[in-house]
Length: 106
Image (tube, rainbow, N blue to C red; front, side, top):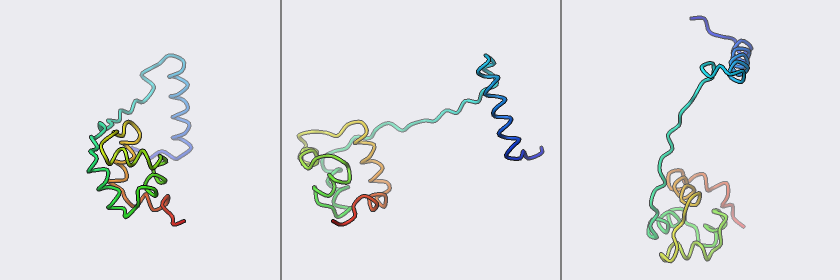
């Protein structure tokens, strides 16, 4: 099978898009991505993530874009993070180096 040049690939993709828009649904390509469910974040897990980063509650709140009161409530168990906050905590737990860009010293 001959490898397509970039321009040939673009033209082929454009042709498929035109066919798809004209009603030929088999001309399109579908990609399915499985998204992992949101994990449960206990108050102890949240505190562990923060402490592993050596951040105060204030600095951790700044990194997450939430108030200090929110971090305090999560760590005390009064409130639980939800939705995008849980996903962000999961990302930070798995890739702590990403925080370095946002936790610059003041």
